[in-house]
Image (cartoon, rainbow, N blue to C red):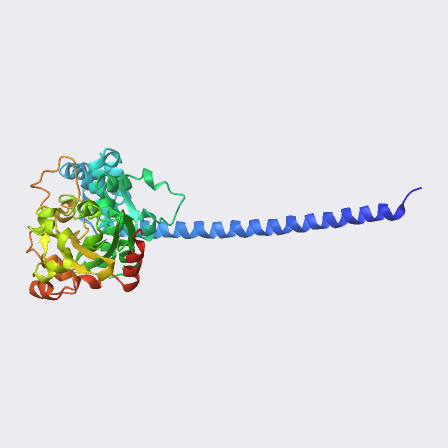
Length: 400
């Protein structure tokens, strides 16, 4: 017996399914038409932009003496230019390009390419030229050059030449882990343009690190500021030793992690004159009562100053403060003498690695809000750099 109701239900369901499919097709068609309209609008805008640029180029050439020069004379003039200038001249406008051709652009080697891009950078405020990559990097993508916390995790930044250059020059070890040279250059470009660069300075200030080493606790904090047009980074390492009667470990070994610069590497016993051997017996308090205090010292090969202070923390032990100030320069070029003085370059002679001449103590004094050298030596509060919370973390970090 034929079930009329069942047949009717199946036919009704098929009809409703067909209506839904038609509706979906109509919606998809309308969506596709909308996307095509949007894409067409963008193409028209791009064409209009290109046309406007071409119009400006034509007008620029019309007002230039080059308009009246024959092609062979333009070629003759180009012969007297450097390779990067020949390439730049080729890109002035289409008539010039038609006369010179693309040979000058294609024949650029990697060094000439960098000089060519450096010349373009002057008129491109949103870009910096990267020497290792031989490319222009956009300042809008600045967070892609934060090696620790990149904004785009899909980028294989370990393969980038600029990351490899930072690794080779050990900037992570002798400046800090989050520092990158492209980030440094972008910060200084924004500063010179009068634009907000506070977020980048915060990245360059890294974060506070606290750890333990046997019976010793260490804490390191950074702060980046632009002082007199140069980027200066202050780093303070606090080493908390147990009281002298509880010391069972060679405290000099704990100072291996206290970095000064790529030339001095670390703090040495000679930095304490003849007082080092007395430290385990007397502790910092006895030396402080004797009037001992080390003033600002400096590296002889780079713009780095450092100072060592100490303070008794009672039952918690004795704290050694090593504060250093690194003047990294204006960040205009990779060959800047101040910057080059901070990095190790194969084949770079010691005579070439000297930073710019300055009076010892001026970097630290200028960083500390414009103090004079005398005011700095008299009033520098070395133990006020870290917060109470950070000190508590340092004390609690020690192994029992």
